[in-house]
Image (cartoon, rainbow, N blue to C red; front, side):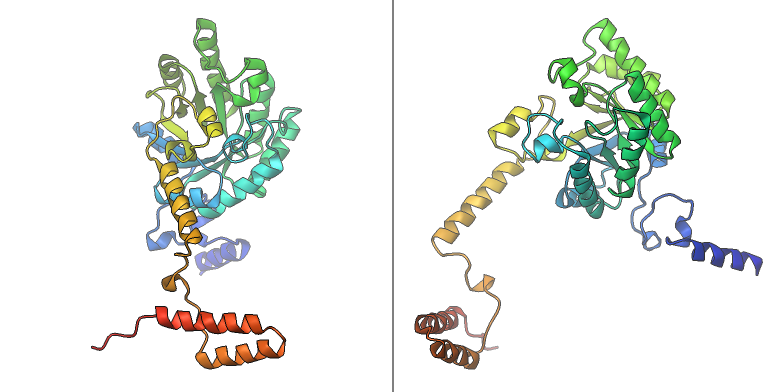
Length: 349
């Protein structure tokens, strides 16, 4: 009896199913056999077993649905949306408010992957308090499970530690950090000299010490990534860092070969493998649509589903005549007559 009362009390105190209380994010219909929600603990388990972790950067509801359906482990809502979606040359212009819109869209489309939202440039550099406040917004307003921040300067390490202490999971990011292109002198690979390579490993270790659950290694030589992966106890996620990381991340649009525009050819990185040629399929479909509209082949009968009876057409035409719209009445009558000709009579069985 006492146990039953406790179960009832827990349910009254919670707005989530009993099975999820203190159990982390899980789908509401997990009992029906749906895939379990990926968490930081899930990633730690994969890392411990030596299983590669899959990450895709996506920015909206449709791409999130595809990422979810494919069974990808982590969906990163990256500040690279500034370049890929909004057409900027760098990631710097995007604001936290715009990032939150992308986060919300992705959260509506992806229910299984761990959702990680980037902290964009300008929303966490001033102080640890600013960093925590921004991270809280990414979770509360953006629907994310964790945040990612770039860099390994002492202030960034302090920010990462403060965010973790606030109860928010943090993914670090070292190597090429696009938000620091002003200091780096552009999108330049890192770790190509002894000092630079050592700095990559040291920074990754510092982020681990700060409490990060994972670290992105971007655009560093494979031996440097291998050394960092070996030195760390947390998973590394490589992007342009070779095959020795704990997992890999690519941008949705890049890996699908979606973009054909010169701007996107300019911003698509050398390390990206195109696993599809979706862009050419999109261009072909748009060209066919344009042609069919211009030749009036679309919409045909099969794509004109809404009908009006002959009696109502006559009444409609009569009403138009009374309004002094005789040409409109003739157009309605002619359209109804053509629609009748286009429809095939039912087959006799």
